[in-house]
Length: 487
Ligand SMILES: CC(=O)N[C@H]1[C@@H](OP(=O)(O)OP(=O)(O)OC[C@H]2O[C@@H](n3ccc(=O)[nH]c3=O)[C@H](O)[C@@H]2O)O[C@H](CO)[C@@H](O)[C@@H]1O[C@H](C)C(=O)N[C@@H](C)C(=O)N[C@H](CCC(=O)O)C(=O)O
Ligand SMILES: Nc1ncnc2c1ncn2[C@@H]1O[C@H](COP(=O)(O)OP(=O)(O)OP(=O)(O)O)[C@@H](O)[C@H]1O
Ligand SMILES: N[C@H](CCC[C@H](N)C(=O)O)C(=O)O
Ligand SMILES: [Mg+2]
Image (cartoon, rainbow, N blue to C red; front, side):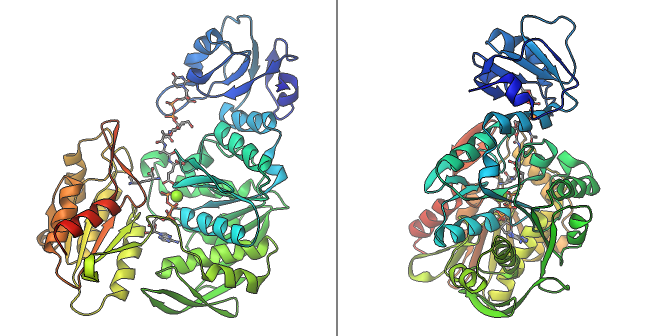
């Protein structure tokens, strides 16, 4: 427990009205979770404005309210007016939890694709090197060896500080955290002292939220703009926007690439279904990760580890034996190895192009590729026609199906996916709304030697339809179907 006065030292309020000497029991951005003596921070969201719930928070026992606009009548609690309550929520939570990030080395990974893979590999690498580590990722969070369910890629400002406190108390020395663009924009990361920031890439996604690609770039860049001079920034120079990320950062500037000039240079020497052979920073190494896109993730991991002070050769030797994150290029062979199933989390046009290009490089003459793909509802609509085209263009057969329709009508999403298909692309496509059925049809069509890619959901173990999450796991469905069809 701390006093309100104590935690207020973390921010510069516009004004404070009322007593600040009381003990506070927690910081809350959701009135529904407010308990006695907690501080409610009213944040304007995308759906509603938290300021509308101030009375409810007071009725539930809030000791203080942090807000951007002072209400007309002030009742029995302390009010703290701030410029930006989302930012204040993070800073106050960091102070409430006694700045856990300052006790560890916290590295944030941002970019459209590759965050989970890079963060997970870093976590596995540093655990293998003998450190106790934390991982905050889309798939799951880890407090050393304890798994904590993940609800977001980057948790909200309060949850993330609570998680970091648990990590510091458990003796973690390093934390690897995915930093989504939503998290930067909503200031979920305010109050985290980063030891490093990594940029993977930026391509089409989330334009429903950020509206324009320029805005999306600016938000990602802000993460680097906010790094301190003691931190490192590491960027991918082969990405068009890689250099921009470093433009205004106070952190040390470091770069990696396969093509452009950079401080950490890599070269792919071999790329096949067993993994990659690369030259990394002058040393040859074999990795279990598949595809050129993973060569970038490996360089980001290697670079971060070296910038954190680890020995280069030790890093490469340890990294060599590691597998990536679940649901990323996860292979499932049918009984007797007749058909190769690949489950991948590609849910952006760029990720889909990359994974299909990787399969194209690896397949041999005569192997047919059948792709099963859907697009999520309540997310960027403009990526749907592109993903439909990409799937048809790079596959022998594309089965367009549902992903997580969420609140949307699955048929509307499929109409969007089909809307830009050319005649020849249409001829290659099938539309099967039910995802289980779509996977079954793919398995029925596949002949011995063929490849089935099931993309978009990766590690997910549910399908969200109209607010209900039904159990669904692409890997399970593929495995079961292979068995029942005896393929
Ligand atoms: C679009 C989006 O990012 N929404 C996030 C946002 O919610 P919001 O702005 O819609 O909140 P709101 O409902 O308008 O409410 C505003 C405020 O009023 C409060 N409130 C609301 C109701 C009430 O009764 N009382 C109350 O106090 C809310 O707690 C909130 O503080 O803030 C919430 C609290 O942090 C998040 O849970 C929520 O994530 C939603 C569920 C979500 O699906 N987000 C996705 C898009 C997301 O964040 N994805 C990224 C990864 C993307 C990627 O990399 O591919 C992620 O980091 O997970
Ligand atoms: N460096 C990369 N460049 C391009 N595509 C990649 C890269 N790494 C992975 N991918 C593709 O993107 C998919 C998602 O990868 P990953 O989960 O690591 O990304 P992410 O950034 O964490 O995604 P999310 O935004 O959902 O959190 C993978 O399944 C793969 O198809
Ligand atoms: N972090 C991404 C995940 C997308 C996964 C895909 N299966 C979907 O539901 O669109 C998002 O929230 O946009
Ligand atoms: Mg992720």
